[in-house]
Image 1 (cartoon, rainbow, N blue to C red):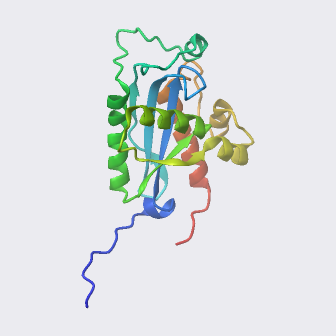
Image 2: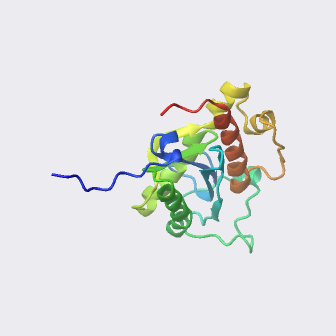
Image 3: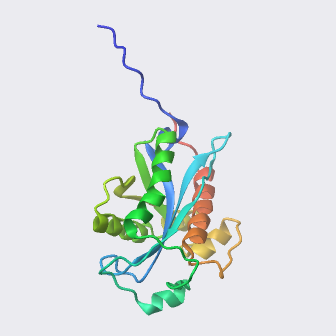
Length: 209
């Protein structure tokens, strides 16, 4: 019998990372314990390919969050991030709505590139993934596009490429400016991490096949 099924569509991005779409994520939080402390900011940058097949940044999605009921905030963490929970223009969303806001464009990017799912890219990536997974669990979110435990960590990559593990120093070693006043914003840190990841990955020989 003739096989009339349509062939599975493969794209350069899907082939590049074995069916995963790299999405750079940064979170700002109310502390270091993802089981106790609140998720306060979330930013995600899906990666794309330019006409030369090089990784480039896609469109950033970001959101401020209300602290989830039952979570805690260490005041010292707010001193570091500069987050003002009562700022009139913060426009925070509750966790389910906030996750929907960020996950929808990530799922669209995964579909665009014919990938199976997203893989989180981050600086100390498991910190970001653990806070993300904790929020997903709290709201019972059923459409999380990210792999539940695999990540690409730019701490490791920058350590290998530049001998630097601190984000600011790694970004500088990659040839980009770093503004300390903008740091500890989820959007700024995610976009700087995305530039770092793209620079390192683009310098690496592409896998065959």
